[in-house]
Length: 66
Image (cartoon, rainbow, N blue to C red; front, side, top):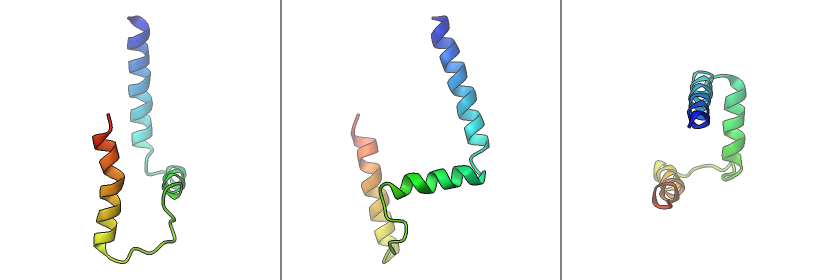
C-alpha cells in the first residue's frame, strides 16, 4: 500500500511541475513535434469547419475507446 501512495504522490508532483512549466519554449517545441507526428503542420486549413472536423476526429477515439 505504501508503494502506491508513493507513486501517487510522485505522479502528482511531477504532473504539477510539468503543468507549471508548460509555457516554457521547450514544451512548446515538444508539443508541436507531437502534433507533427499526426498532422502536417504546414498544411493549410481551408476553413474553420475543417479545424473543427479535425478536432472532432482526433477526439472521438479518445472518448469512445476505453
